[in-house]
Amino acid sequence: MAVIDEGFAEVRELLDTKGIRRTLRRMSREIVEDAGGTEKLAIVGIHRGGVHLATRLLDFIEEDEGKRPAEGMLDITLYRDDVLTGLPHPIVGRTEMHFDLEGTQVVLVDDVLFTGRTVRSAIDALIDYGRPKNVKLCVLIDRGLRELPIQPDVVGLTLTTRPMESVKVELTETGADSDRAVLRKKE
Image (cartoon, rainbow, N blue to C red; front, side):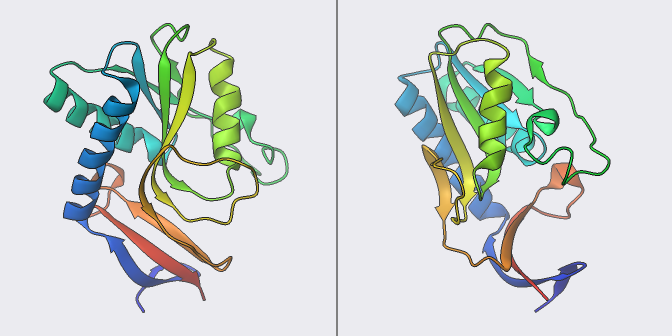
């Protein structure tokens, strides 16, 4: 096992660069199919991991459909239930929602779904901008172990992890040498 972060060792690679690309293309098509097209569709990435994946999904949708849906990014830092206890020095990112949410089908995008708390915070933040027609959840990896009753509508890979394991998605946009998703274990 290779050490990839202090305190964590890599157990196995879940997706490589080609695997992530294939998975995102499939997911982009599922999103459009479920929405019945791109009209009144918005793809919103959750900071940090979901923003780059949302951009890639938008690129695939535009390539396939000839039209790019509305796009946005959502920072949930101040909506987290642990903002005062779990984040000693919270860093607030950008939220951009340059479209009317009213009547829009919103797809929230994140890299890994775990407890469900990030998604709950994202929904709270999203509702502050208006009332969408509906909100769907799209995640690259669902690792299980939910603490809240939240489930993805579009998922790239589903696996069952243990509490001492985690999943890390590495993307070139964030400085990684190549795209990949890895299962890690606390040492």
